[in-house]
Length: 406
Image 1 (cartoon, rainbow, N blue to C red):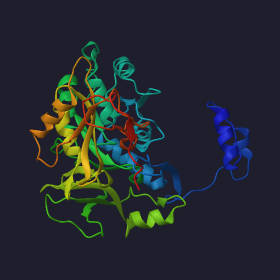
Image 2 (image 1 turned 180 degrees about the vertical axis):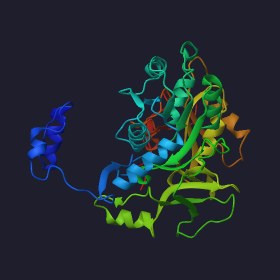
Image 3 (image 1 turned 60 degrees about the horizontal axis):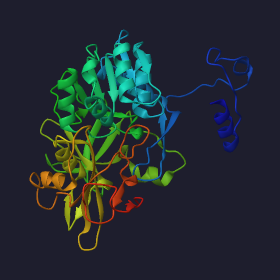
């Protein structure tokens, strides 16, 4: 680690200082002028880089106030207590793991049990060994645990609550996990730019499957169109805009991106959603992921939810591919559960029977795995699409990679 840090410091043109884990406040730091400085709540505390799943990563500047307030919010949302053991399967360089796991755990005085890289068997071992009470994870983690062939061999009775974020959690996965492990999953929503928690299914309120809940304390939501006009009708689809103590200062060294994203304190997220009469929000999809097929809008998440209902489907990703007449065509890549079998034709017919005619994927193929980032988010831009007629196999045709989104 030291060698890599030294190399990085040299490339950045900054001084590299090595300190031991047990003697962090070293002689150098104690006596070096300027080693300790006053700071304001509005000063930048961390710079978290967006995942870059829809473009080049940008550095979100989060203040001390952003981070401390969001850690407090997270601690109260999960009711984290000193005797809790939190599962640290999320990378701590990511806002979810850093704020909701590490920082909230420090505030509560609870234990955080870490795993270097999420692997379902090892995760089950740690959940059992350390009697984990709170699990924070992304949907692919819950899918992996639910589909583990030996899950019944592990005692997870200590688990009292789980939280899911980072991506939309398929309703079928939520219900299956809760039935298998007896612990409720509370779904929330946030971004690196919002420290991250912005909304949540609160434990003391009605929990609605498929919903990201309601805005947390001190945070406001609204839905807007492309020109920042409010979309006020209940049930109408608009882009989520967020205002509150959790919104970042801006993007580091990128005033153009900051000006585009933030207006009058409101941050536009790029996520499309609708809300119900009780102010619960439901993510429809990423604005950039929406497929426009012959003038009709197709939201990939809706089709993915249907694919997850098929008993053989483990994971699914729906993407748009170029079409000479329609502009875009709907396509789907899936992985299958161990010991099951399904063809692309079968899965295509399954979806066709359950959605409008213009929505079902004309191209469906089975693959051994889907590309994922370090936080377990499926990277749709890196999916390789078979060239030719769909057969349910990714081994039959040469492949092409989706073009980088603009």
